[in-house]
Length: 251
Image (cartoon, rainbow, N blue to C red; front, side, top):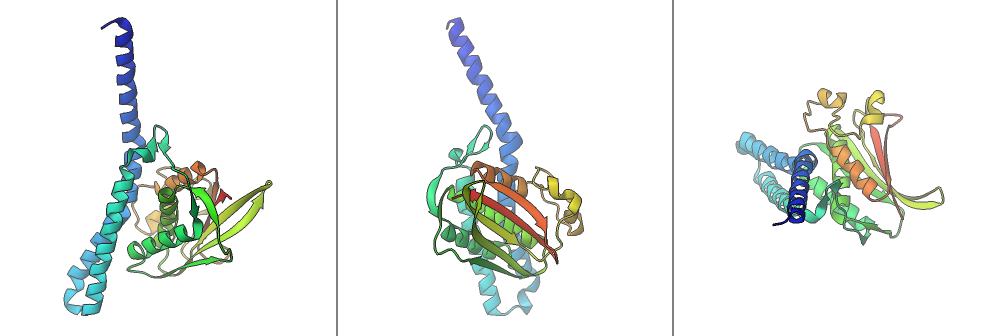
């Protein structure tokens, strides 16, 4: 083996070590975050059945067991996608863009959210759009995870009421966008935290109020997905109650 071969072998080794370090530092926490919610949902339903079995009618029991099966199926699909090496690069997530129907994709994300998130709360998830059809170049997997995380965030900080997902078209700087608004009726966001709420590992004071001790990665993952789609994401408090999270992607 000559000096050139040794140099190449060393470079390959260092690259592999660096890739593994990036994976451990950035990607493993993201994978863990995405898997956490369905795992908690299965545990929550199972605990409900264990604690209320004798006082629960057969129809409710059957529905709860069906929900566990649905969440388990979702978790299986999630694991397959999250551990697909094509979903990541050395900088973070990797998008596989295809022309997709945004209305269909949104409805799929809402269906997934209803099965996993809104089981034990008096919350209705609504989807509103006046657009007859809309298609865009998106990564369908990461797009659904984006909406799922925003809906999860809305439900987490709400006890009842509606979570509305509204889809519109807008034009900014001579560029047409599809804009999605996720509006909740919860406790809102501390005004001082709005500017940094999308940064990784920022949990915010409302997590303490609601006894939510997550990883603080959900909104940073949303940001990464939106940026990968050449879009923008923002948050604001509503004038009455709750908060609105909006993202836009090019048409």
